[in-house]
Image (cartoon, rainbow, N blue to C red; front, top):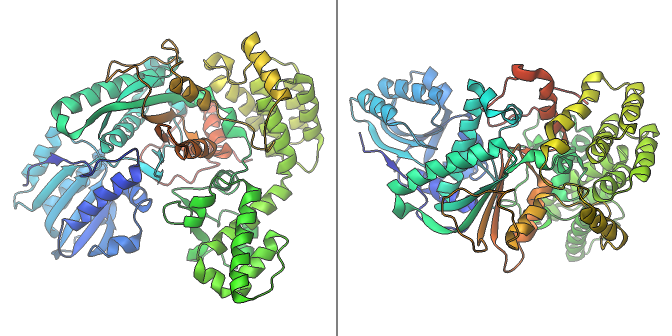
Length: 603
């Protein structure tokens, strides 16, 4: 058996995970010559699909692709082919691989695990490989999902059980923590960095993760110093509980709107999930393979240019492109609405030919527009933004009660408004009255209890920072000053995620060591040139947008954002709802495509 080794990308990159991953996959598929079978597991299928298309894989002489579970169940011999395994080092996968080696279905085996293996298992593989069929065994670091070059996730929909004291964790909690540790360490190893680590001091899970990472990275560096860079790179580990408000707001930039109103999973939008208006717009049925759209800044130039555009700018950019094409064709098309854009796309085939993705964005924009109108989201969002950005208790009470009485507002939007009010004015006696109104509207006790569960999860007692700038007189004065003299171009996008406040403290060297302690790994006092932010409990596309815009500014550190999941409000509240189950929560750890937005509660 060929000697085991650890591999990183041959090139050294800035904080661009997409380039690092492409280098991994290119080498894996190119260095094995001849006819190949690529065998993946459920998670690596999702990981690969974000960076490599099936057609790109087939061009590398891959004639067959299988899931490891399916491969294990067949006894068909394929001695004319070489097998490439790209799998996570789970116990299940290791057992299936051992059986595969004993069955000798392929003429040669090239095995790549996405994270580290135990020496004991390597010895087991060597014993099973009596015919010396394993030609390569390598640990690579590709144990994460790359959403775009500056964004990654571990696709773990819930970490709620880790919010209890570490001393109360059970074996499932330990397993979940280990998956987070492995995913985050693999991310950093693939970038060949040994960072300084800061973490949120008030969070026990962040502290444990920082200490474990520091320990494992020090050991890895001592073994393979030449593989890593000691640089002014900072890893900042944050707890989602510090800012729950961001996940409850309606969104008005393109990527964030798509996720909030339709749902994005692994850079795909599945319009079969009850999106009737969209199905009509693109004239497909629910069984059509085209019902799933790819939304990727790496594969779609129009999306890359417009993912952070607000909805008005997006519509104008689509119109400008159609106008350009119609002028070239000397066609006359009157466009006054998104529906007119859809008709123009259908009428002029050249629009599809010049930009195959444009018709997709017209259809998606039409759907977003209908949802905004049907749900009265402009009216709702104005109140949401005012609650999270300004201190005006009496005005906010009146506004929330008005929204509760409005028959055109959906119950789900009303519930979120009460949640935002409760987060800001936690001890207000009017909250119980708001609950009574929701109950009279037919809301179930399970959903009403989400308000209390949210406060248990991330109320004032659980937050160390000043989320609403209301913890001291100076913050309150500054907030009132900002509300009077605010320079906000759009009232619907004035909110800024709280982590920007922490980021500003880091960049101005005002971060407090007692609030954000550092481990002793690669400690430095200078301004970091690279920053990796990881949010335990998940991140959001609003926060992705902020990092994307910062990365476009000159003379700023390169920033990479990651989280255990990318939430919208429904997936976030589905996670919060698990608090009702106490110790009986069954957490999914090893699953790449958890389409379970409403797993626990339906709104």
